[in-house]
Image (cartoon, rainbow, N blue to C red; front, side, top):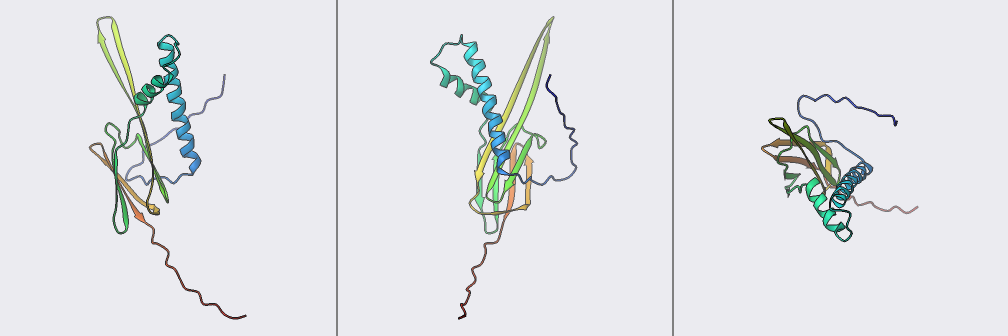
Length: 175
């Protein structure tokens, strides 16, 4: 048996700041999603009798079952970038927002379980929804002053731009 690890998490009261992460965590998350899609595509392949020729259809169906598109609007004001994203069905505990100076990542995963009992038959359905959206920002932002709110399935993220460095003229002196 392989060793297993567990992490206990406790909800934080108040507003949670967006996390700063390195680029490797984004690649790890993308690899995890790719593996999930590959497993589901293989399940679809097996379910259809393992007949070749429909691999791409199985892949696209697995993608559509596991990943949901995140529609967003990015607006640029004088000193802020504002993002408005549609994330219906997700709670604030199920979403993760990562901000780097020139990149925003919104990811989330939630599961709903539905069980219906009819006589001696038990019907159970598990539905998982997962989102991942990576956006390159048009300006550098201050990662320490990012605020995010979620209301009625709409995620609003406000990011303060970092002031543009001013150019300074340097006079040359003869040595």
